[in-house]
Image (cartoon, rainbow, N blue to C red; front, side):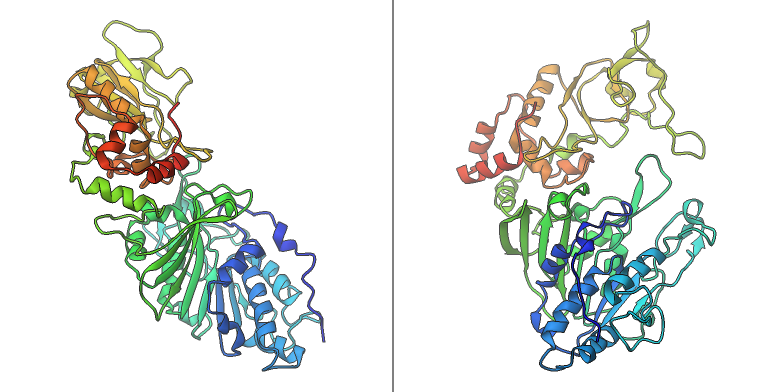
Length: 511
């Protein structure tokens, strides 16, 4: 009989191979497994699938629990180990490299039927951890299963295709030709789409939906929290998740590093427990550091909203605001690229830089262009403006459409507003608030924007850097013939001292 020895635990300090492959620490895996009914680990009939196996840590930790839970039913340890690995644990590796790593972690050898394997029943090298190299199925330049672009992911046989086996099929049930009681894992989060910088499209949602399609008794995955408010490619996924009352437990980490030490994921991460046979409210747990700071049993979708309200104490504040039935501030916020300067080179993502000057010349107007150079303000011919030409001569406010990289609590949430004078415009770096009747009204609007109250309501929809018009939806319009302070707003909406303290814990004064 081969003894199982898990020390030292190399998986606790395994570095991530890429942004798409975030490895899961054993401690976190066990916290996820703790959500499951523990009697599952005391049954020799329970079957488990990790459809996104990387290090094999999920299967390994499940095996440890089963090995302990089945001692009385299968007293002989070798017979028990053989049964667990051959009849209860299954995995689908995401790459050839992770398949070898997972087999080494789970079977103690990269060949499941090898001399040193802890399981003596396998006839194949792969055992129950599959990896089949697949190619994408291209149609009109994109993969029909994962939306990968052919230009980026059409690979030769010597390169990894990232055509993940679990989602590149209409019939995932045929991979193992069996049903599973529990599906758990940490799927790849995104695929580069060939755009500028870190441009990428989400893919984690496809793994969750494919797992639900298999209809297990329980499903738990850890994924980015960006789906709370929708965004690129996950609007439909958000709707499905928020309306699915089978999600019974949610653990939310606004700072991903509290979950994955040393890893930054914009908007944080979460893991959940989906229970096929039980519907109801969800236990929502908010984490900060190593503490759960808030727990509430509630539906993921609050009445009158279309996003998940992240912080439990936020709900009472939002209800007080909604009870006033005021128009939304989002009505005053422009769409992206308000003056039409987001122009790209032909057949490229590369932007065409606007032809502006650093010094004023006859016939030019002020041009706010933060992002091209550090100074941020130059002069441009108004003939170059492609949209909203009538705004040029109006009073308005400019504010960055993206803000928040690297912030720690409490947040500022949005960048400082800039008074946009008459005879001015801005690049696609900014969005426009307004226009307004005069500069005094603009100043009063800016006083409102600077309040913690205003920025707190934005934070309910803004969990990434993007600050597009929709994040202003929950903010009510005020009478801008007067200036505004937090004290006036708290009094108007009946915000209690406890609620004010909560806002203070999230939002810092604007610099």
